[in-house]
Length: 244
Image (cartoon, rainbow, N blue to C red; front, side):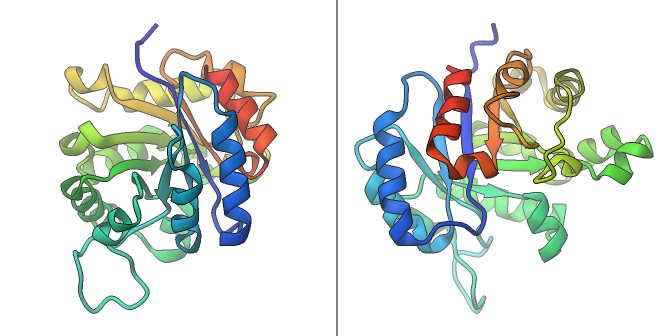
């Protein structure tokens, strides 16, 4: 066994109001098993309520994005200091939807990752290939570029990588355990030996209670970045249990 502590994070995306967040997080926090690290990545409007409801528990609260600047004329953006002021533990960066719909580049993510690390926020950095890139045999090239250009190795102490094959997000399609393990092993090999042994890599492509045990049994898969299944407490807790 690796000795790396499993880490399961739920990415709510644009779901749940602040009013819905409080009872949900309180219930989740009260039912968490010992063992894995568990986090919820919630919308900005729900962060304060999630932090309040999770207080005193082992459940961690992450934002879904942040701006790299400490402050300034960036209407609609949120800084690391603002997140810390709310009591947020970390931030999810580079999700494929941010890359696809909002034009986030690896260069911009390198700035965000550096800013989050300097501020003391933990980071989940998402990487992954499209279906077209996989069919063209470019998966390893894409993953290597995303890891290198984001400067991930320089911020590994606070970093978790989430491998999310874009063709499997929200589609119900899931990479086979063997295929997922192959990608995770490749990602791990992009880091120096002393980092590769300890850095955690989550799988993030339609992980559900029925496929979680087999995926989490792979030696290089250290947890999951969960989308739809994280919106239902029982389903999310079943995945957490599989990582226990």
